[in-house]
Image (tube, rainbow, N blue to C red; front, side, top):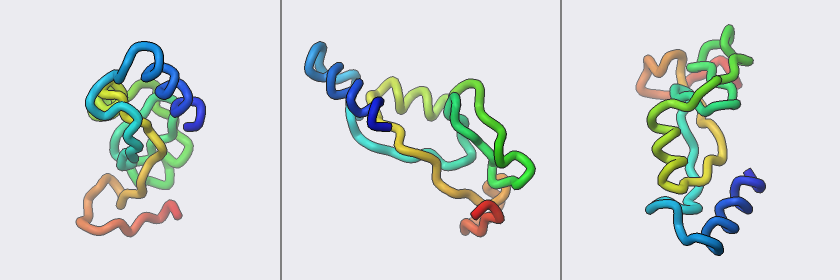
Length: 88
């Protein structure tokens, strides 16, 4: 994350903002893939499954200049309205 923040700062200094979210930190629910980051969908059996490509949401956030800081917890497959995950 620090490397990404430094890259965004350098980009801002050299060529201006990438988009409307340049440097704004955000998290992605563990229901969306981010390339190189584990995505479990809240399922214990997928705890170590690493995404090979980013979802549309993650790709658009990055394209807009957002600073990805991590994943937020989710219930299994996002099936409940509350987050009671077995992956604590």
